[in-house]
Length: 145
Image (cartoon, rainbow, N blue to C red; front, side, top):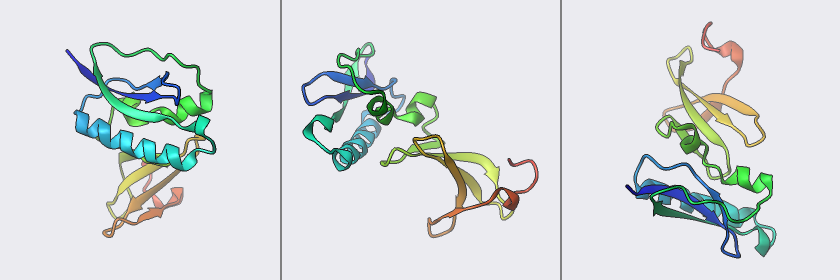
């Protein structure tokens, strides 16, 4: 049975990183690959920093063939797929990961936590116009945090 993998290639054609298999379809993988490619091009300081994300079907997970600096490998990881919960999680193009939690604020709005690549995070809720509002710990009912 073929499974979908997000594969990152170096400029020389080596495999730099491979995601876990996607449970969802090829279209979902391709949307993530497009976001990653756009971000990689924005972040690249030289041609050597350019990598390409491609969705491919394989029976088994392809092996990485290129040695890549740890900071690059971490940037390639698609956290929602690696954690196995793409329905509650969104990989943002800038490398941040947004989790939709089951917690709610005093007004009943769903709590979202955005985690930065350095491990720091911020919690907040969205209003009716899809604007994110950062909230403080004391704004929550007891037991949420």
